[in-house]
Image 1 (cartoon, rainbow, N blue to C red):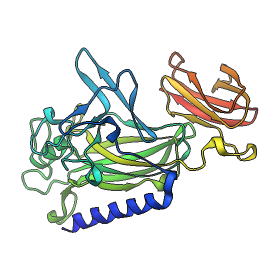
Image 2: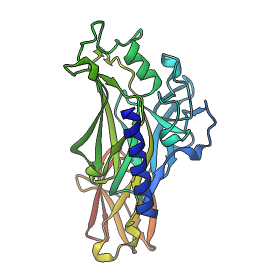
Image 3: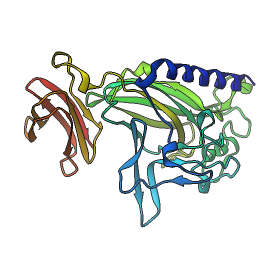
Image 4: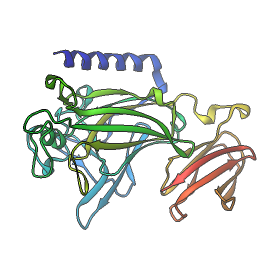
Length: 324
C-alpha cells in the first residue's frame, strides 16, 4: 500500500512539474508508435533507432538470425510467462502513469539513450524505470540460467543494479546514478525486494547531458558475465528543451553537436553563419564547410574512422564528439 502511495505521489509531482515548465519539457512516452496491447517493435530499420520526444534509442537488428540489441518498443502486457520468449514485457503489465507503451533495453553491454539536437547539452529531468517480466520472474524464482535471488536459504546477498552515467563534452562523466532493481543485501530479509512498480528516477542532478549510458551489474555472475537477464524497461523520459542554441546571441553561444556519441549522421546547430571544421585529436582536418545560414546542419560521418573529434565553429567555439 505504501509503495502504491509513493508511486501515485511521484506521478502527481511529475504532472505538476509538466504544468509549470510548459513547453520547456518534452516527454518521450513512446505512444507515437501506435502499438496495440501485446505488440512490440524490435527492428527500427531503416532508421538506426527509435525516436520519441527528444530522445533516440539505438537499435540493431539482424534479419538473418532475428536478433536484436539495444532497445525495443513494446506494449506487451504479459506478466506471468517466465523465460526468454517473454523478453518484451514489463512486470507492471503497462507503461508508466497508466500508458500502454514503453521501451525495453537489453543491457548485456552498456547501451545509450541519445538526445536529439534540440535537447543536447541541456539538463534531463527524469524517467520511469521498471524490471522486465523476464528478469523479474528469473530473480524471484530462478531458471535454467540464473539463480533464485536469496538462494535456498533466502539469505544470499543478491542484487541487480542499474547504473546511469552521462556523456557530455565528448567524455563519460564520473558522476552516476544508481538504482537497485533488486536488493537482497539487507540483514533483515523482510526488507529484500525486487522492483515491480514503475519507479521515478530524477536525472536533474546529472546536469547538462549529451546522452545517457546505462549499464547493469548483478551478484549472479558466470564465466560469460551476468546470469541474471540483463533487461530493463523505461518510460516517460523527460528532457528540458528550453534555451535552444539557435535562440542564443553571439556572445552567449555554445556550440551544440549531436548525437553524442554519433554513428552515421552528426547534427551541428549554429545561430549565425561561419566556418565549421572537424579535426582529429591530432589536429588533422577531417571535414570543413562554410555555413551560410543559421540553423541545423548535417554531416555524414558513417565512413569516418571511429574515435574522438573536435568540432570548431567560427574560430573560437569548440565541442568534442565521439564516433562509435
